[in-house]
Image (tube, rainbow, N blue to C red):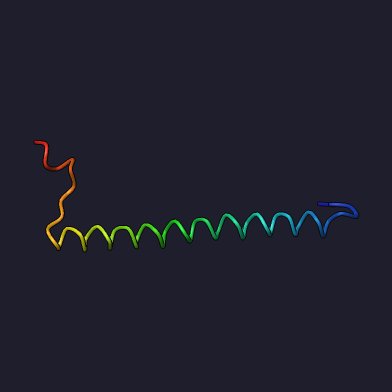
Length: 55
């Protein structure tokens, strides 16, 4: 595959996009775990969600 004289720019662009998408996925995984831990902490202290009260 010949990318021509702009091969460096094209490959750097793909690399930057891959890094950004990877960073976003990593942040989502980290934040999801943090939120799960925070919810578990609240439930351990007896705080319940409003949606569970209405039955």
